Image (cartoon, rainbow, N blue to C red; front, side, top):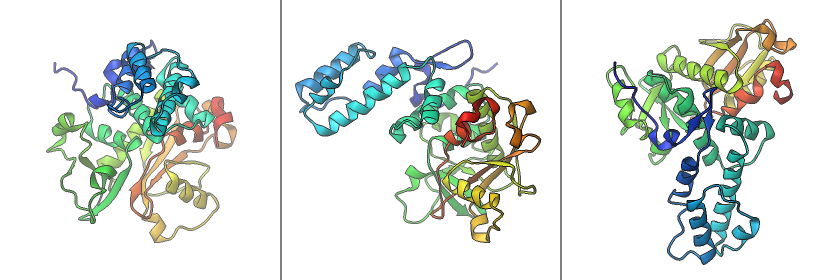
Length: 325
């Protein structure tokens, strides 16, 4: 029997503990990894206050930090960075699990830097997908915490990591490889490089894989059993829908209001899914007996920025009805 292959090592999953429900528990080692990041290490010219704060937290990452300690730092940018980091640390430590900390951020609409939120989503997904050996699902999951550039290539719609292709004037796939059966084994060694692209052409494996990731995310974060199926087209009236990004929400709003979509707008849709609940009593009355539709769409400049928080606040689940938009 082969040992389980690891992935996304840089997210720090191995530094965390799990509780009996399989959710992530914060550890001092995980916090220390934040303080060891290059942007947090004081430069040689840093003031005594900043160097003292850094050393104190390196020795005890949960040490109480009062506002006066941050205010005493001479450099304005450093004060801002430390303010964000201490606020972030205190938020994570306030909850029993990282999943609970993330849910609080989303439901209370707390303001943290997108970089920190994306890192939190990644490490939670690393936990959600710990037993996954499907590299299509793992690559699709990257879209939850990394913006994508959508590329039309020989009749296919390809998702590539936006940061890696942003320096190109055109839209070449090099130095990226599109995930295929022939090269899928390479993903395990390259997962932290984020340099493999995903075919999201309608009806192909990548679109279904994204739906599978959404299903696992919903079941883990909301403790509700669902089934999700990729669709080629929308055949029913929208009873309830969730846009997985800003463009998709606009498209869903238009359909909800009975508008006809022109061909340009239709071409922006990357993924369309039908979600059903295993237990219909989990669903609010207005959505009961009908599927919930999920829409993913790229912007007009061919960017796709998924918002996994929309699945937390947007699904018609009775016990979370107060948080549903």
